[in-house]
Image (tube, each protein chain N blue to C red):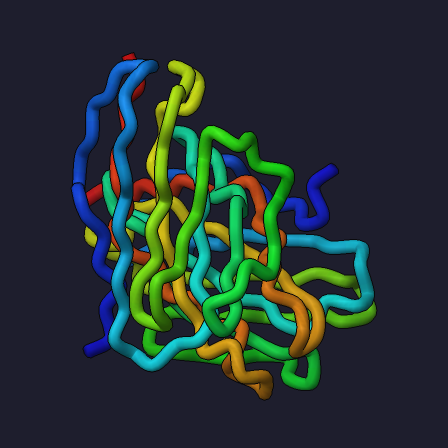
Length: 116
Length: 113
């Protein structure tokens, strides 16, 4: 299995809602990432988990809360979002064990989030 | 501040032609340079990657050329096909302990049949 899967594909939520995005990989990767991508822009890194521990938080607002329940799963909990948070949210994974190929990040298809 | 500068922003090529995308960087600590291909509504897919100890890498119709002294690298798409129409991002990262990818701004390639 060489895929990163994400659910849901699309999500529409109001500013007072609480929702979660899910990501799963079964490649044995030990690093998992959340990115935000606006239209016609490159992905922007939000969080990195390495061996199930939060390794990088790129000063993301607290209305985004990541969680890594185990080495295969990554969640992003959303609460009190703003319309400007509407974007494609991408999950990625990599080996995370060092060596030549560890930086190879494999992306999921993304969740298209619309905040009303 | 964008650490990797990518050009052009967009390009149109005829079927069978060559698409060339250029990237430049300043940080000499970068030692891994991947290219990602992204179709509309999809996540980026790793296309090909190169390390600085190699000046060229070819995979099928896709070739990366790397010029370490100029701090530049480029993607050539040979015999471009309509199915190659996508946005291409170059990226760079530092050594084994760096999880961050610095992305270029992206190039939208349109291949006309």
